Length: 238
Image (cartoon, rainbow, N blue to C red; front, side, top):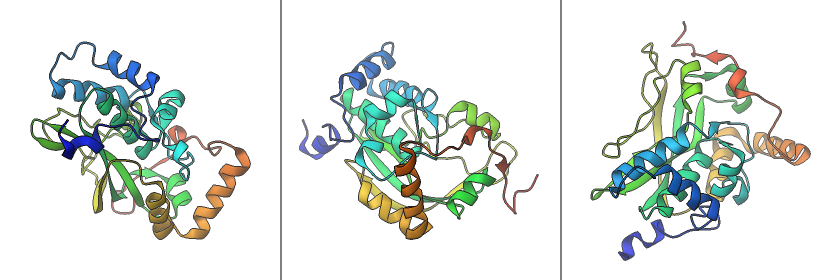
């Protein structure tokens, strides 16, 4: 093992790539991929993008909220949880894999989500980087295909050779998402950094209110993102 990749191949408490359910799921996903790491990474990407549904209303403040095996078990997550799962699957297949984070501005969301956040900035948006063919390649598996269709966004594809991040425009040429600030890459999910980053963008009072709601309910908030009203923003009206 090349020591410079050691941290990106080993399991962590959160990115539990040694978990049996993670290994089994990874092996099923790459069954017909052959020996090529690029083909394997592509198969893994699609095994996360669509089967794991995007849900922005899930808890976010404890390590178990991002644990890859938990994401696989429950079948839903927001971008960071989906990145954690994809990262674990990559490591389970022997591909050096890490997670990266950026603040993004979302011009295409739902009215309810924007009101919930109090901002159109999505703090610490998560993505994955695979080390393939001598370079790090970005992959963003956040939005499942059903959600993309509803928002009229062309589903984000990944070929293992080029960076795949959110399209700048949706299918109607309305601005969709722009990257504002990159926070770097990590070998594990930096839960404390994520919470601190969210507090900076959304405010501590709002964060504490969310946490209180999760603690009271014991699970996700009673919100259905899939049925919410798509909002195109003041500069992207229909």
